[in-house]
Length: 140
Picture 1 (cartoon, rainbow, N blue to C red):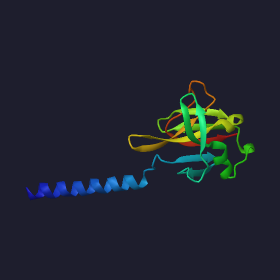
Picture 2 (cartoon, one colour):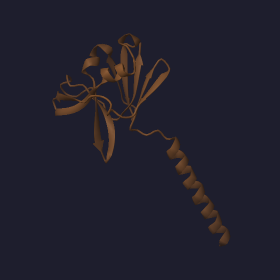
Picture 3 (cartoon, rainbow, N blue to C red):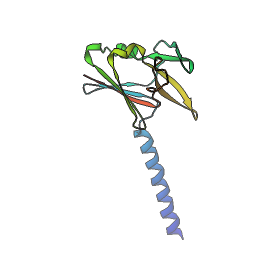
Picture 4 (cartoon, rainbow, N blue to C red):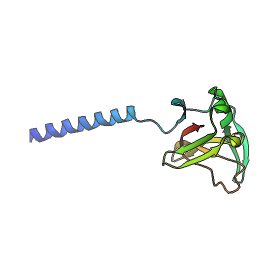
């Protein structure tokens, strides 16, 4: 009986250790990776950017202009032609750089967790809006 309890205790300690290890190495979904030419920038919070009120078919939202975010990273419009927004579930939307002025990221909450959402106010039926944005890839 002592052997069984000892083995169970060791297994429980091992599992707890694995959980702590996994949590320390697992990336949180609360940030966005911005990838361009093998460089990765990590955008964790949007508080340093100026929020804007945007009118959409769903009403008024507070968003952060993607162009101003990219400009703060010292990226020029000549560095890329297409922007891919990728969600944590694998969804992807490609937007041409010409539409950069009309792209916004909003912070929304679901089940007590914040996530980023791509909003394009000019889309009449929200067809190109994307929830749970985790990556932005800039391509030539």
